[in-house]
View 1 (cartoon, rainbow, N blue to C red):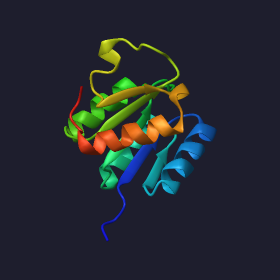
View 2 (view 1 turned 180 degrees about the vertical axis):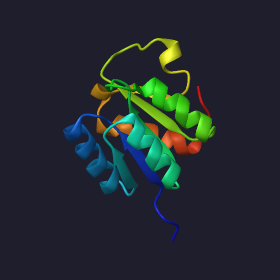
View 3 (view 1 turned 30 degrees about the horizontal axis):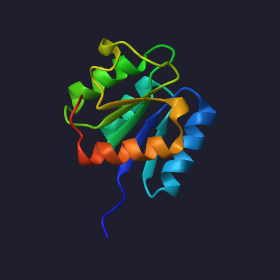
View 4 (view 1 turned 90 degrees about the horizontal axis):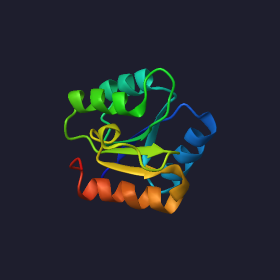
Length: 123
């Protein structure tokens, strides 16, 4: 059997990161977690990550900047941007494959992640 996809979750909110990681593991994914953008970029360099779930609002380096650097490293990497904000400007989502709000919940997160694996191209 093929290994489960390896997902990288990047979020400065520890509780949300832990809950998201547990949800993904229960759904059959392998998960790496990073508390900030620089840590996420280091994990992406060191591991065969197959998709990223990235928080938008983080101190120091926001999700847009992290996504931009990830795209430079791995242009075809599926990236799902999460935000508490509804209606981010187009330039904030230009480097991600999909964007959703955190309020959409776990079923939407899993459905969007599945979409990333079937169509990983950026919007």
